[in-house]
Length: 87
Figure 1 (spheres, one colour):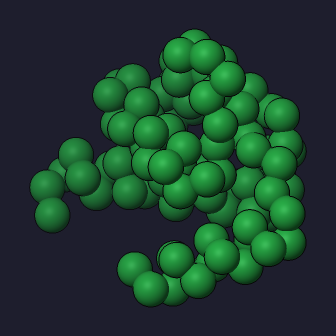
Figure 2 (cartoon, rainbow, N blue to C red; figure 1 turned 180 degrees about the vertical axis):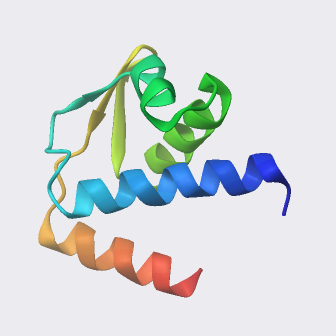
């Protein structure tokens, strides 16, 4: 696995964990620039991580520049854990 792939996966994991733990609440807006600064990385791996989390159902793109934490039902959470376990 390349360094950029590892970095992207680490960011995904940290954001997933924060969403599941309730640190990032439904409707919370994620700003790529702010996350890049927080994680000490460029915007590229953050943008890639955001796209992955959108595809996994953790985040929702309300517009190209407005990404928010998606409201998850219990069923969604169970399905997401099943998917993560399968990976």
